[in-house]
Length: 77
Image (tube, rainbow, N blue to C red):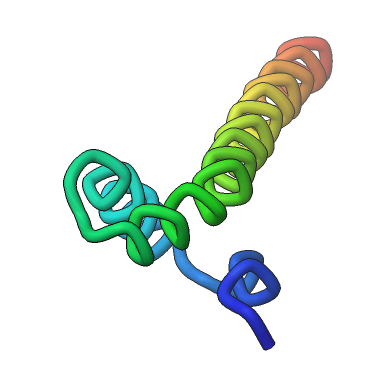
């Protein structure tokens, strides 16, 4: 199992840490590490963006649910 395969099971902090390390390595490591980091960067960035979008959507849905609950409570009162 590769690191890219494991990304969905990692925590947000772990993914963010890997992304920071990969970005750092692309700037000044030896050639092998630079290539490995460059290979991981697109997958890491995609994972971070997907998680951010999922969190934003969950937040919007929670706000809608609270708003609906308030309207129902107001009508019942």
